[in-house]
Image (tube, rainbow, N blue to C red; front, side):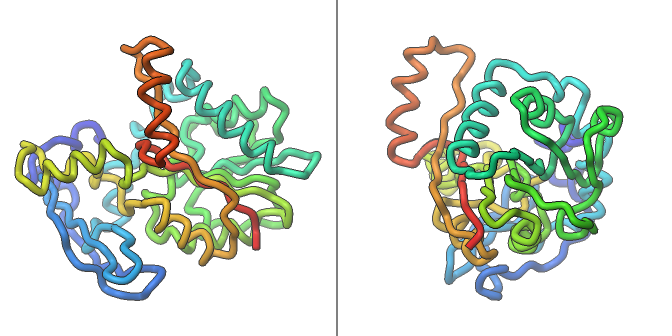
Length: 290
């Protein structure tokens, strides 16, 4: 259903997601200002104080669960680890290991999906666990400790984790600050938080936003992915949320995913300036408990 809705007409989307709810900025408790309506009828707004962007009003989470986050959202082939995923997982785990002081590497993968990262991290020697709003059968059958639900709504017992990973998850949540605050209670004192999100301050997204504002795109603001993205982050706004949740930012980077139609050296030449300038399309932030 996610694939069938993304790109469909506004009438089709509104039939599947008929209701909307208001949202205020979790940092400033202010009502945001509308700056655009995308081609499917989703409302894009921005806090006038901290500049955090999010949908307002937005679809109800229960309706999103039925129409988007259903059993087809994580097909079985999402468990496969191709070359691109190997590079992403290796980079993230290497960064976590470099920042960690704990000898026992335990990681909680929030939004673990089909379990590809869990498998990869376990093979590297990590003790793994996961959560997801809809746990797949593949993960359940793997024997990994897993919980179903939003992180803020799950009851844990004595579990603590040396690393907690939100990889392209926070932008889907109802309240990203509440999720990060819950993570703060679950992480060890010397643990490391990883948050990976789309970077709306990236060069490509900025150019597409300019085209949308000028009416030069047939499907304006499609690049925001508002069918399933409720929040849209820059390095500044994500850092502010992480700090408000009780963490201190160690570092952030904007890695650029290699393209399969480019050779290695061409990808490196194209990637390097974007990553150095913080203009890549992905934002990975690392933080410690404060």
